[in-house]
Length: 252
Image (cartoon, rainbow, N blue to C red; front, side):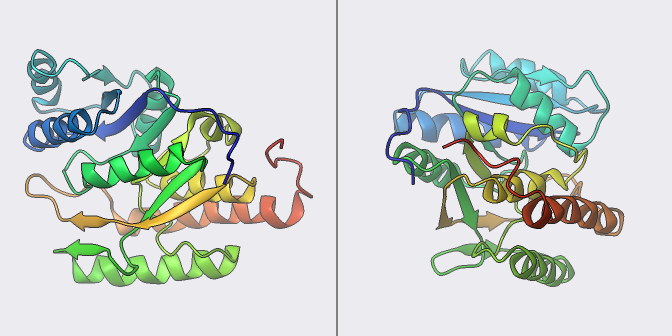
């Protein structure tokens, strides 16, 4: 932990969204309501990542009701990772949290992340697979693949975190800037950021979180397409960890 870390002022929620017209209203309204009740100054940056449905129109309707909503369109190539980075670049907060558009992540746990960051941690990582966590309606095959992948990451990097692949994590802005440039254009960004942050010496706390399956739409993650991409990013950061001789570690 970094007790000398500066107090935080604005929490930016980054939500990549592609064809999420049905999910977004409940997701955005719940985040705004929960953060407001907790007294957290925030902005909700929803990135329309090439949607073909009414996602952008829905965001304009929501913006009229929710003053902290800041919708934006990804002007570059599409892809989950690219959309997240686009959203981060458009955001103003001194801390960011990445959340999914389908309400699978709990805003109450994002509040817990904010509290941990304000205690001085550089990163707040949630785990769906430790005591106190809860998983609702997780597809069986996806769960098996998830646990195997996270086991291999945990062993390969010798870290206690057992849910690296989950996108729902929070970081101080200094961490994001210290982990650039980002290479992962797709869901593999979910492992690139935390593994780089850990490898480069940023402090982190792990807390139990919940996850529930989406009610609307279809999952965007395609396991068959992502295997080699996850491996590439893990191998890249693994080489940095063991062979860069600390060239990229944070300045104390």
